[in-house]
Amino acid sequence: MNGTTVSSTTLNTTVFVASVVLMVGCSQQQTTLAEVTDRVYFDIATQQPMTLPVQMEIPAKHPQTGKKTIVPALYCPQCGRWYASPPAEVLQRSAAAYRCPKGGHPMSPNGTRPPA
Image (cartoon, rainbow, N blue to C red):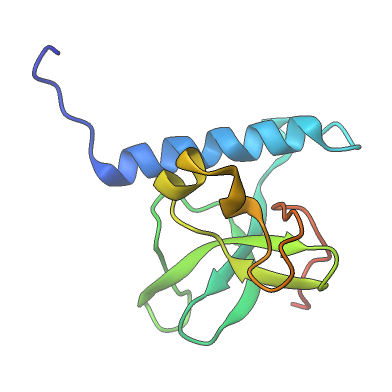
């Protein structure tokens, strides 16, 4: 190692963007990264999903409260619900982290968008 350090936030952001690129690339519709300008996030304070512009820092600040309670969300098509995504480190280590906490079904960042 050359003594260079990478912050946890930078690493999390890089992993998150890479996972979005992979999932978008594997979806039925072919969307380029340049087209991904917003995504669904989950407010851990209110337990509600919301669509926001792509955030580079996670957890992100809530647009109204200013508190860092916004994390990426994953959608379960079986439940029809959005859930808070586990941290990037957990997603890297375990494919089971992409499973619904209720029914164990596969989840993805693509799903029915919450109402605005």
